[in-house]
Image 1 (cartoon, rainbow, N blue to C red):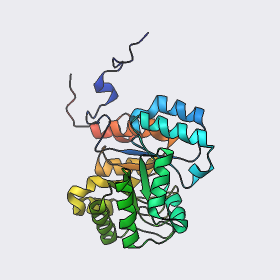
Image 2 (image 1 turned 180 degrees about the horizontal axis):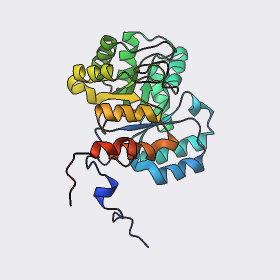
Image 3 (image 1 turned 90 degrees about the horizontal axis):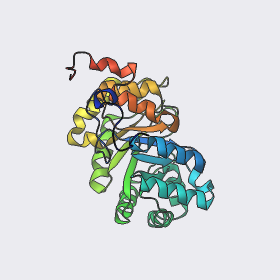
Length: 271
């Protein structure tokens, strides 16, 4: 019987880059999207992969379709394992068309959520309402993730708009700003074929300065995850990762997969 408190693999094997932070992390965050996992599958996932997940999003408006008991249990288990868990931003957009940001945040607290996504990807949101929603969430004690971008197929991120949103949202109380890519990975910093604009991403990070670490780049596909890691480093914040890809993304971050292991070339290997 192995002692679970003693690492079985040498650290130089399990983390060849030697740079991965343990939780709670301030960089290299992984945000997972859940489109409807049952409780048993979710529990199995947490047992295997919780150390490699930082943010867990119940995508779109799926959380409204859960049996209450299942929702409470998923939220409670995620929090017990030091994850931020939140509904998708689309639910926020729907809710405030019928109610107020304050009422929405109160309902999230009642359900046990510890984080919220604030977005305007489908319905427009004024700057004043965006600041009000961020303030309401922060006042409620929720960790605030805002989203920059639209769901429309033609949407491409604009430098000045993204930098302005990042600065304003963080100043208003947001912890991170998520750059929209959708499940398709064909909007935002990606073209219609899912290819990343490397020069644009690097320009944003350079211009953002100290705030660059507050950006989470949605990257649902392996090629996009590889591209961002190779462009911005293993500690880039990645979002919209499928639950089936959590360990695969972690191997990319650590240099345990051929796509990024080549970055080890030229590095000094400890004996």
